[in-house]
Length: 341
Image (cartoon, rainbow, N blue to C red):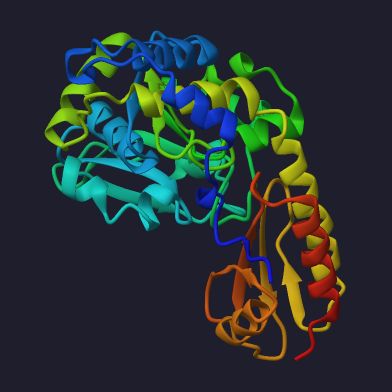
């Protein structure tokens, strides 16, 4: 029985051609900024995003945490949706690393608006933290793969400028959103002071995320990366995978998005499913019916060789990625239609 892993798009493994690119990489010592392949990846990412500089890091959590650190001071606060990855899944790093508070907004499927942000900006007071940074996530993880349009970001960016707030994008799955709408990447990212782009999810690299922004801020982030233990040596082997991913694996994300939409429609028709969140990209989150617990559902699913994640007592998450073949996809459709509880 073949195993089909929909736990996350982080489970992808390098393809043969990606491995060949990694093995042939020219390397140096990145702590001394002398690894040519890391330098090439950073230059490529900065140019792609229309920013001055970039920094290659081991993970998206690190790039997000570095962004918070470089944009804030202790006793400041960040504003984000209550579903945000920086709040829920980064171990409270905003408090540990940067000594800042968090101001949570209950948005819609992980998205917040300029009006909601304006309503929570702190007035000057000795007993209140200083609002300093807004963090948006696109696409959203906990929000089911939802994403912002440029027209939705512009009023947020205008508000941030008016209130001297920085704006950061957690773009862990940004490219899934980019290919869905086919908007110009520069038109989208122009509004952000910094952007975190993950290479090890849908793009298929084994390790790594890139933080892009202004040169002086990235220079500061590089120092913070070092103190966090993120200074790497011959990291060009990993950076080569990132370069390959950006060159070859962006457009194919439309396949993952389309598969998720098809499965979402099929799930919505099943008696054992109460509700499916709107499927926008490669993530499906659905609520089970009749008090069917996620653990029971996943145990049954695993008997067919399919793995997925619980996302609450009665909810489940599927994520599609490049390691799911056509044969695997057909099996997923077959099993979903045959499950009985």
